[in-house]
Image (cartoon, rainbow, N blue to C red; front, side, top):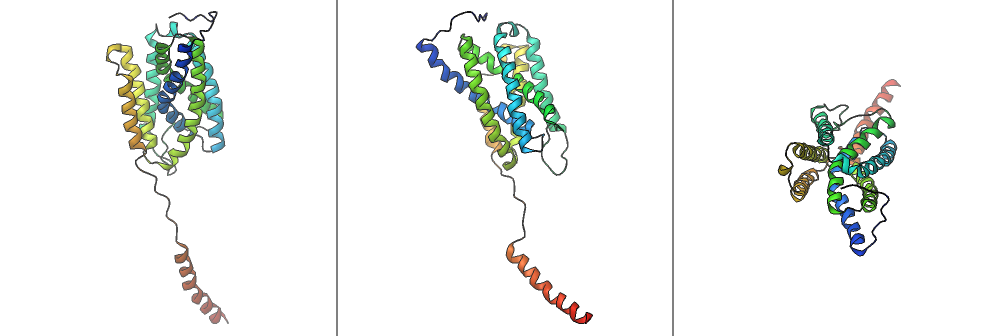
Length: 252
């Protein structure tokens, strides 16, 4: 498929009906992407920096997506791009599961000391995921402007979902591990496509596997830190009161 930007856009009814299909497709395929980006953003300890990293990282990611869509007919001819994408995603997974906990926290992913370290990692991760989603979108429609519009709406949806996942990662114990396992599935899918395209699992199977992982990820909430009940603290103060009075009498 050769992409020609000089062609007038087809605004027929069938073309416009494809737009919500592409948006829903982007949203479904972005669930695993969103949790991966949220887990990466957690490498910044400041919540404000996490939000800024997602905002700026996804702006860069959208520019890279546009370049990928416009060059799709050239990119899909070279298996090396998918191999690099698979290697990058599997490296993230390897780094996560082989790292050690530090400072009593369960975050195993990459850690950043500044905003500008997180932005390229977020952008490259989204680009690696886009190798799969853009290929699917091109199979649905040959209208470049429609794919670009669907991708833009998909990035906005991705930012909203990633913001939710950042909050949920603090609430559910297994969610971060489930997210990185979905990253492993996407990486393995790209790797299988490089060697034998006929062995690539269908989309419905991938979505089903991701749904199972997400169900496990949301299965257990983080136990809140135990606090001393107010009644117990009052009792402790009451017990200590006679001791202080005795010490004052003996001092006199």
